[in-house]
Image (cartoon, rainbow, N blue to C red; front, side, top):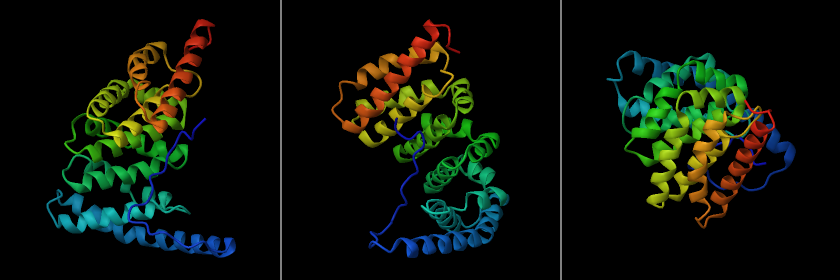
Length: 256
């Protein structure tokens, strides 16, 4: 099966020349230490901005959150624990209710955090991220921001069955299905692929989700089969396989 969590690629990343494995490992450790050391200073800037009602230097706040996002996008040792310890998760969540590019950057930061361990994902969930993320999926005027929000939700859903069921209980499925229908109608393939992958994660893991959720996804999955896109088809087929397993478990008395 495909990975249940996808780590967003770092933006503005230049192509790197191949390096010696030992040197690369040493560089990764050095980068991780450097990134961790930056977090307290950056966190203080964002905390001050939020404490001031987000009425301060918006450009500086955006630059700082963008820097945090880039640190959290490091392939080796991103400072996830440091950001959580610095109290940045509730700050990122608060910024989801704002406007402009900082909303996208904050959503990306949260996406990178939940792509870590289950404890990292739970830290974001417990801080109250799900309602504002779902609101972005439903109402953000920015397709880019909606895609980032659904990416974050997908990482949460794919982590474990308990977090998946929490999302289903919060009404994530109708929001994701609506986004899929809209993106398919407007042929926006990038957001459509990520929303479909989110749908796949919402019906995967064991124990299987309640059959009512699985059945609700079927009409949309059937429509996706008609689209000519290899990545989309792969996620659709995996989703259908999860649906079949859930249906079989329910028929055999093993469903939830």
